[in-house]
Amino acid sequence: MLIDSYNRVVDYIRISVTERCNFRCQYCMPEKPFSWVPKENLLTFEELFMFIKVTIDEGVKKIRITGGEPLLREDLDVFIKMIYDYAPEIDLAMTTNAYLLKSTAQKLKDAGLKRLNVSIDTLKPDVAQKIAQKDVLANVLEGVEEALAVGLKVKVNMVPMHNMNADEIVDVLEYCKARDMTVRFIEYMENRYASKEISRVPSSELLATLAQHYDFVEEGYDGASPSRYYRMSDGYKFGIIEPYGDDFCKQCNRIRLTAEGQLIPCLYFDEALSIGKAIKEGNIAGAAEVLREVVKNKPEKNRWGGEDGEVSSRAFYETGG
Ligand code: SAM
Ligand code: SF4
Image (cartoon, rainbow, N blue to C red):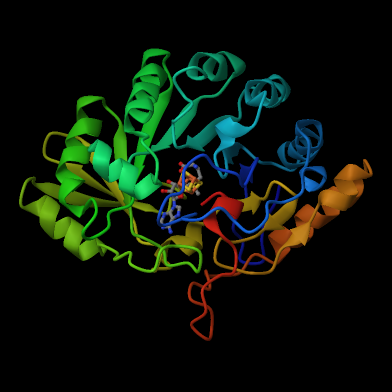
């Protein structure tokens, strides 16, 4: 079992399989990065799987595949099947922008994927075009319908922004509610890669808007999730993620792996160690050692904004959000 220095059990790993993306979301990757990680530095699926087996053997029970856009990576279903065949009981999930989901949902489900988080920031084609800098909405919504049709459980992430999509909070909630999908509103997290004009909608404002339309009560965190949940009078639940807080740190159970093998103990913490060399040399014991070291180094609380107010130098498309 992986236990950190603050007695938290680490049993969840988020794996970014690529930093590349087919969207250019204003809050994440508004411009194509100056350079991508060279292909030879990326871990192959076989290498990633070698490390995943180590984490499962050490007690990991939940794996989320993310990116960049994970569906850009070829044969993702084969990779998912490798994990499923090794440990079918693992809670195996993926976060995606859903652009390529229509043609892949069935294969992913058959391979053993259980759950999806899909990013839907708007239901208006022109706003989607403005946020992602591409005409994406039709594909995204068709992808979601297909995922539901093949029986995948779907949650939705929305990042509300003033002068962009803040006026659609209720519409997106209603769209999700009608399909029995939980929606989670994520407060925009400042980062040095995002467009400068973005204006965060704070949770207080979100709640005030929602309170004009619904009755709801706060239910608190659901297990180790960073999302605070609210239950409406008809039973529907929505969540709000307030990354600038640190209430959720005391129950944090997760670490992150980048596509080139950087193992990160916390999203808002610059220190990371690489498992790349050990895994590429087939040194399983070495990779397990790095894993235990990273868990040991997991900070008590996120260092959001850093001690000197600096934001993390890592992009969300590298860490997988
Ligand atoms: N490409 C996939 C997607 O968009 O769902 C997976 C990767 S993306 C980095 C994962 C999540 O991070 C998405 O839900 C996205 O909305 C969120 N995200 C990215 N940048 C963010 C930011 N600056 N603030 C808040 N959430 C952000
Ligand atoms: Fe791509 Fe997801 Fe980042 Fe948007 S949020 S640019 S879809 S990685």
